Length: 199
Image 1: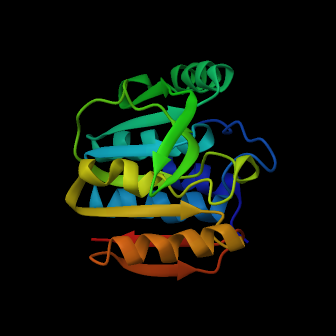
Image 2: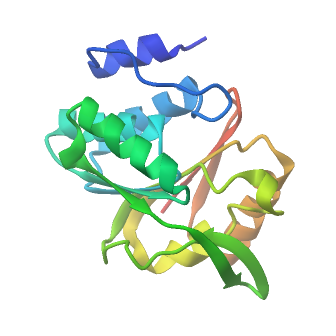
Image 3: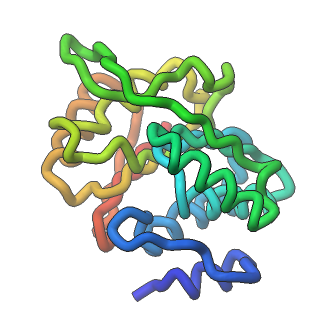
């Protein structure tokens, strides 16, 4: 089984990444995302939720000698913590952690608690990594990601959805595909499950 240590070695980290059990993305998910980054070299990456994934994505940008990460984080404390970790790993120039509090967001005749987007620059997103908001907040908690960011996605883009083994994520991806039939989908049966959508 892939470990954080092997991922650190692969990506050339010179010290251990700060990992929080149950909250940090699993190493096999981070390996999938980093492999994609190193191969496809996306210039604009947006992630929903910050943390260990922010360090991994930023390190990939550093190795690629280009690209930038915009990390949406609803918790101010976590935003501050991730920003400090990026500085500690000398990765600040590759990632902007945006404090994006959750707010009532109408989507498809429903209302969700989802990130405020007023601080996200008007960029075309090559890679979208979805690992928040937490699933316990509401049913289909991560559903708004595609509807809210669809107009910002580049013509050719890739979306990674973590925790995809859960029933909620399985159902919301079917809703996405019905609304956005131009996406091809692949399911990866790893530790927590992962959906990869490509257009």
